[in-house]
Length: 175
Ligand SMILES: C[S@@+](CC[C@H](N)C(=O)[O-])C[C@H]1O[C@@H](n2cnc3c(N)ncnc32)[C@H](O)[C@@H]1O
Image 1: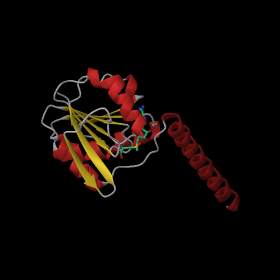
Image 2: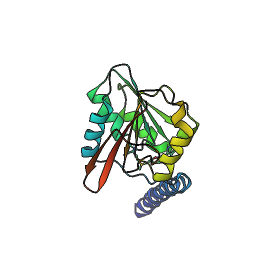
Image 3: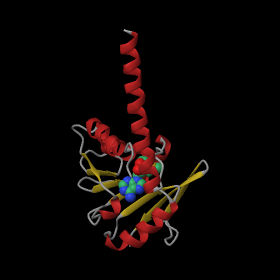
């Protein structure tokens, strides 16, 4: 019995180590840790987003997809897409999203066509927001709204900002 318990414990520890090593490798590669946006920020981001029926909404680097899950409850008649490089998180997200209009894509979002996006939510990093501006902004449609938590696009003037504690939420609307 003790042998069995020891083996079970070792297997669990090994699986945990593999999982965390996998996450750490991806975090170093993509230079963004997996940290979730808080509920208060998500509620404010939803106000900025003004999602309407039929629109296409992305969360880039979605992690546990807090923005998409909250938005899909508030406006179920839009299309929601989460993009994330960490595969195991998407398995769990897909399970949670059953019967909801949310799709998850396991891909580097820089390689994705975002031209159909009406709204994009990001909680990423300074340099990544700069790259989104250089590599993606020209492909996005006029009127499209980008909401970024904590990291502004320094080359653009936000349409609105809200201070939430020590952090800021930025809204950009493409002309
Ligand atoms: C700070 S977390 C934010 C998670 C979630 N959006 C939230 O607000 O709670 C950033 C996530 O972006 C993912 N990520 C970073 N660069 C990426 C890329 N180029 N393509 C897809 N996912 C990326 C990371 O793996 C990480 O899970």
